[in-house]
Each structure stands twice: as structure tokens, then as C-alpha cells.
Length: 276
View 1: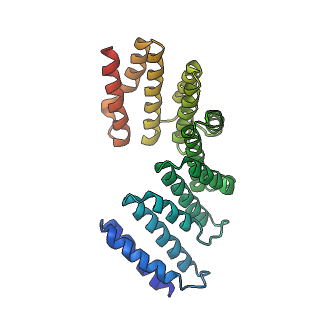
View 2: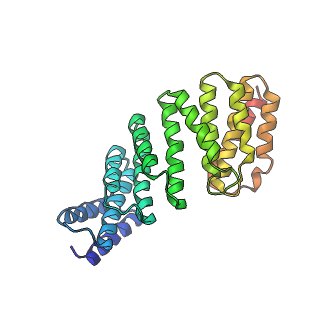
View 3: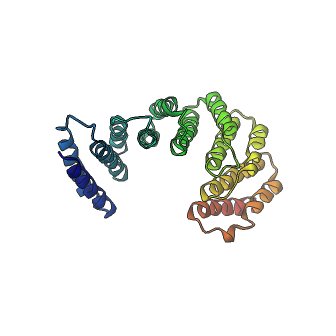
């Protein structure tokens, strides 16, 4: 298969995907990957990139079709595509495939498998200096801590989440979201051990995070919601309401759906607490 044919066929798969013709896209990508099986030399960059894209597209399609176990294996195949890991573009492609594999494994309840994948990703790319791969490593580490919590490996989860929160700059727009997610996981682990006061102290640190981007604002709001829940558990309902009111003060100005969904949950919690 010639490089330009590979690119053309890969583009055709993506066009079908974008058009919402998922079954047709799967059939086309399966045919394309069968043709790639006959290619012995992948040193041509167009061929290599087309192969990765085809494998990754197949994994995404399977994810959207709900075949998450198959998607996890498809992401593993994408991550196995030959790559020059000194090339930032290659590096973040492989890291993204591994990250998505871990997410699929988590989604089907294979948290142990997910832990292994997140650990592999971190081990291979933790020294990456390009911001895209560095972000994928941060997300993998946060997901790793969450998977440990699902496995009730609470002490490990707590230590990892605390380490991540300490390493990520809350004032940096590129790391604020994952920083607050790590705080929330650390607090959840402390809460699971019964140390509610320590969990509250951790959640208070959310105020240090920049809220320039919607994902960070959503995480800060979710952390405030969890703070209020803990206060209510301690019988401090009035203070819990104050925490919620502070977040909701400017809620009418928020337009991003990712954040407004969280704020709706906060409003529901406030109504419940106010009526208790």
C-alpha cells in the first residue's frame, strides 16, 4: 500500500466517523487495517502515522459503540505502533492511547488492569518535557490514584494523590484542573479512613487554584460540594450552606455546561440542607 493511499483511506474513515456513520467507519477501518497487515516496511512517516491513526480511530469508534473491552484492546494495539519516542508527536500519541486504554479498563471495572496501564504510562513518559505528554502523565497519575481508591487501597491512593497535588502548580492554567482532582482524591481517601477534619483541610486548598478554564472551575465547585458534605456530616449545616452560597454567588454568570452541571448539583444540595 502506497503512503498516499493509506492517508486517503484513513481520511475516509475519519469522514465517516465525523458524519456519524459509525458502523460504516468500523467496516472501513477494519478493511484498512487488514491491508496494513501486508505492509512490511513502516519507516515511511506517512504510513506510520496512517497506521496509528487507523488503530486509534478504531478504538475510538469501539468506545462510542459501547464495546469498551474491545476498545481497551484496540487502544493497546494503537500504543504498540512503532514510534520514535524522542519525537514529541509520537510520544504523546502513544501516551494518549495508553491513557484511553486505562480509562476503558476503569469503565468496565478492571481497576487492577487500569492501575497497571497508568503505571506503565507514567514509567515510560514521566520525564517528557513537552506539555501535551506531561499533561497526559498527570492525568494518568490522577486516574491511578482514583483506581487505587476503587480497589480500597486507601493508603496508597492517599499518598499518590497527595504527591500529585504537591507537584502540580494550582496557579498554572495547564495543571490547575488535575491539581484540584488530586486534592479531591486525597480528601476522599482521608474520608474513607474516618479522618474528616484532615479531609476538610485538604479541600480548603482548592481556593489556591486558578479558575481561568472551565474544567478547573468545575473541579473547584465539586471540591466545595464535597467540603459542604463533610461539614454537614459534622453537624455544621450553617457553615456548609455558607460554603455552597459562596460558590453559587456568581453562578448565573457561568455559561459552560461542564461547570453548570456541577452547580446544579450544588443547588440541589443547598435545597436539601436548607430543608434539613
